[in-house]
Image 1 (spheres, one colour):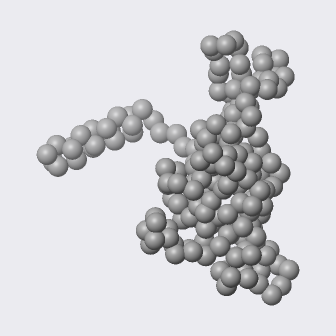
Image 2 (image 1 turned 90 degrees about the horizontal axis):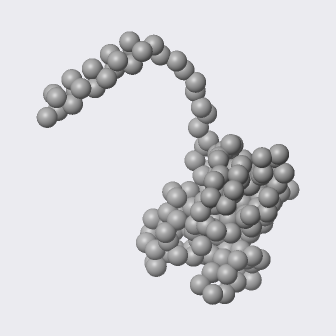
Length: 189
């Protein structure tokens, strides 16, 4: 429909798409002490989910958010009392502006939620045993214009994942760095 009105529109596929029901920006999985999955949350990870993007000028949000906007024709959750999703700016999603209207927090979680596993010991006690910050939002893609090739648009939705670097320093190196930090602080005052 939007294309017939002359509005640029494309289909987007998000692999490992988070469905964050409680909007806490994490997908929580609970297991008991034996490792059996407990159904204590409605969060889930879908193999993929598809939505549309359309190119809009956002006078309501400001020009910073102009550009591609996410519209989901198959929303699974109510937003402001009705089943709708978007238009959420891809720039808002990438920048983590989750307090904007138009479901930006839900869509941020769809591509960027942490996947966390908890051991549930009792009604009041749980312990985080695993956290994966890279599992959600993979190979976000659209079809290339004029060919059947895939175009990766992940960079429109999230910054590159940072690789963890493990290193060790001796206590004396750590202690010396604290002394250097104090010298800089005193010089600045």
